[in-house]
Image 1 (spheres, rainbow, N blue to C red):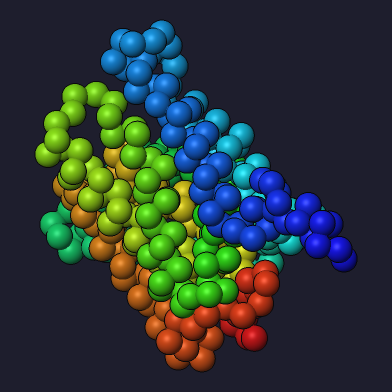
Image 2: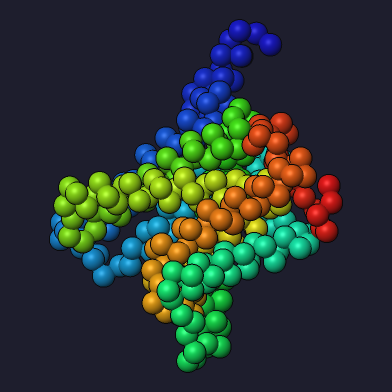
Length: 299
């Protein structure tokens, strides 16, 4: 290949994406995503119209029309269209065997146990209705946003970072943009400098915990679908009005759910480490992160 052709191929936006795929992804996500998320902030302040539009509309738009296309385009440019198809394919990898029970039940069960330990009590009225409503809300959130969020953060970003770093380091790095994309929304409503700093600290702490948990489960299952559901299950365990909030009375979800997150993540990481599937949270060597645990817990 001549020097001129090589320069043409590696130059421009596509060339930069080939050389620096993660940097290109972050430029696209924050260069477009932050201005979009600034719109509900400006509307809330009365600087533009549209204050009646739910914030979730803008979050959904950034996920569907900014982050996901950016991850797929950068993958296609840097590794080929087949790699982009493989990334999407991981969002539908469903053969997980007994891991489905861990993904779906571990966080809610441990959250309830922690809540009871801290003085909470189980609700007795309308439990079946609460469960059905909570499950429907969870599935809707996963299909609309969490699955695609994790296609981006876990399937694209953390998988790429683990080619160079350990699982733990990759999760810590990924936690920063994961938290940062949500930061403009901290400006909605009454704000103060102290409140903003506390909000940023909480986002970063949540980001670290979430990315570590997702990284461990992604290593265990190789399925973006699994970690997308896990993301939704955590929100259902943590958020006010969520599934666990309707089942557990007298306990602070903002305390019990993070404790459960730490316990479940540590337990799964310890299990994988004991089977030599996660020695020292080592670097992932393959181009597409593969499941280290299959049905029945065999390699």
